[in-house]
Image (cartoon, rainbow, N blue to C red; front, side):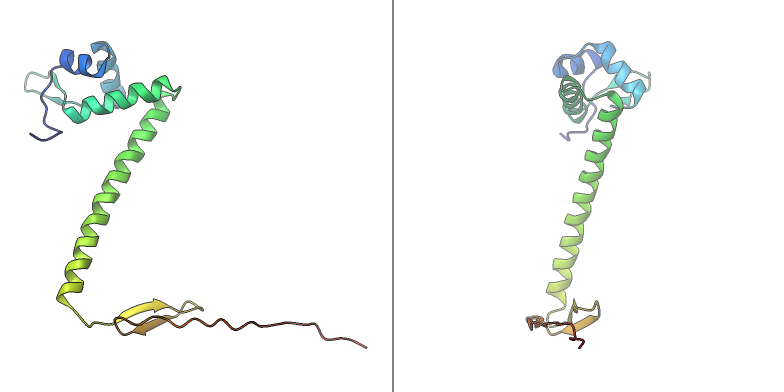
Length: 138
């Protein structure tokens, strides 16, 4: 069973979230939680929706406004999407590295230029100290 499977009618979801069913209807109208609808237009909540309702209740009890809650939920969703994308890209990178051993590696130089390196080598950094003294005017 998937966490986003629509399982619960509004009364059960309200009980699981510790809220009144009318509060769930209001949050649906405001777009804070969007349950799926059956052919007869009744709401069906998933476990993910219930967890989100609990988070809304927690944020509300901490004094966050409904608009603030909307923003927090939106940012959390964005972070989840970006994390999934990072995992996807990490997998693609790992596959690419396995399929192309010995390929060149690039690094950025101190002036921003691109430096081509062989795999397994490191960029040498200059650590010279430059002392500046103004000319004495006599």
